[in-house]
Each structure stands twice: as structure tokens, then as C-alpha cells.
Image (cartoon, rainbow, N blue to C red; front, side, top):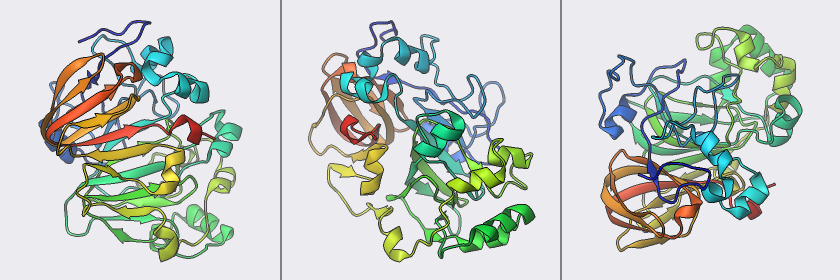
Length: 354
């Protein structure tokens, strides 16, 4: 495998699991996908509910937790900073400097996640000194249990003082009851724009794409987080709630963020709703014949089967279920073949940046 130097890599790099500590249960579905034991690693640590794939992002307020470490021992973040054009391409660097512009996770909700939301780019610039806020999207790749659901957006417009009362009283029933409740199955995708209140229900396993930050403003913090301060990230809820979308999301609006792709048998399926393209891209690849892929920084998640990825400058690598890879732009043109299903996650096209 090519070592990472200041000239950058020229081939895809297979990545091990990367599971920073989380406050909620889950992880068995990730372990099953990766062919690992759900009881844990050699250190005895249980397989966690999130696997941060190709991550240059840390947990909020932490130095290295969350970062992907390459086989060379180098953090991916530092490798990208040392050779951004090799990793990301000149056009991407012109738009985003040395940020990948992307965070990909495998997320297995072994319990319902709390009601929370994320800031916009402008809010994050003002309050977190960050170019990026945190829009995200979920690609449902597995479900289990009796009634797997997600909860995107308020069903009806909610008054600000009502939300403030819910937060003060930690009225979980009211918060969750005000959200849309959407049953999901594999092949469904949900785009979550910044500000949208949401939760993921127990038994939902997703590939999650996000902007490369860890800004989660959690209005349902009791029984999940240690303190309200971790819910508002030090801003105070009066300030944090300014980033919340309190408008109603009826069926028509939901149709603009929820996409059902299970019935699409095309070799390439654009998985996400149109609005997501400003922030990230995701395609499902099923090559009935060798499938050509343009040069791009990408994170690959192999969901099924086995195959091969041949790149212009990096030769050929074998793919198997549960593999994850980071692909540098410098690998060049690529060709995917085999009886396999792969999710290809990419940052936005540079011309879509704002």
C-alpha cells in the first residue's frame, strides 16, 4: 500500500473501523456489516454505534477523537493538509481550501436518538468560527425491530415560546410528538437541512453524510447528555434556538427531502434529494458491466458482494462486503466491476459551493 507523503497518495486506501465514544447504544449492525464481533475489539471495547469513515473531523471540543488514522500512522486530516490537491483536486481546493468538505458515518441506532438540530453555515460562522454548519443526509441500509422510523421536521409550525417551554421542562413527549414520524426501509434516504429538528428511531442503520463538523444542538438532553450545556454547546438555549426551523413540514415539503430508491435497479442511482447537492453527493453503484468513475475524492462503503476497483494511477484493489475506502483525487479515472453494491460518497461539486 502506498505510504502517504507530501506528494500525496495515488491509490484508494482501505480503512479500519473508527469509533469515537458516543452517548447512545448501538453498533451490532456495523459489526455485522464489517464481519466483526459486536462484543468488541481486542481491547474489550464494545463495537460502538458510529463509525466515522475517512474522517478529518473531531468530536466537538476534542483534539483527535473522531479522526481517521491511516495505516502509515498519520491522521488523514494531516495527510490532506500536506497535499490537498493530490487528495482533493485543484478545483475543490479553490472552493474549500484543504477541507474535504465531507464527513461520512455508519450509524446504527440501537435506541432512539434525542430530538436535535444543526446550525447553518452562517450561524456556524458567527458562533463557532466555522466555515461549515451541519446539513446531513441518511441513506437507510438496514432496519430491525418492530417499527423503524425517523422523525424529520415539525408537523405544524410551532411558536418559539412553546419550544422554549419544552426545553425548560424537558417535555420529551411533546417534542417527539410534534415531529413527523416516517417509517423507513432499506433504500430510503432523508436529507436533513440545517435547522431542521429531527431524531432517528431505534433499529435504523444508515450511511450518514454530513458537512465536516460535530455541531449538534440537542433540545432533548435529559436522559441522553450529562448536562444542558452539552445540549446547547455553551451558547445557551436562547441563542441556540435561533438556528431552529420551527416551521411546519407537511407531506409536500417532506417529499422534497425524502427519497425512495429501493425500486431503482440502475447501475448508478443518485440517492439524495436535489437540495442535498449543495453539501454532498451520494450514489449507489451496482455495475452490471464495468462502470467508469471520474476522478474525485470519495469515501466508499461496500454493502454487498465482492468486486474490484481499478484506478488510473493506483492499480486494482479487491472489494468485499463491509470494506470502507478513502479514494484520493490523484487516483484518477476509476472502473468498478463485479457483483457488488457500493455507496460512493463525495463532497459537493466545487461549482455548487456557496
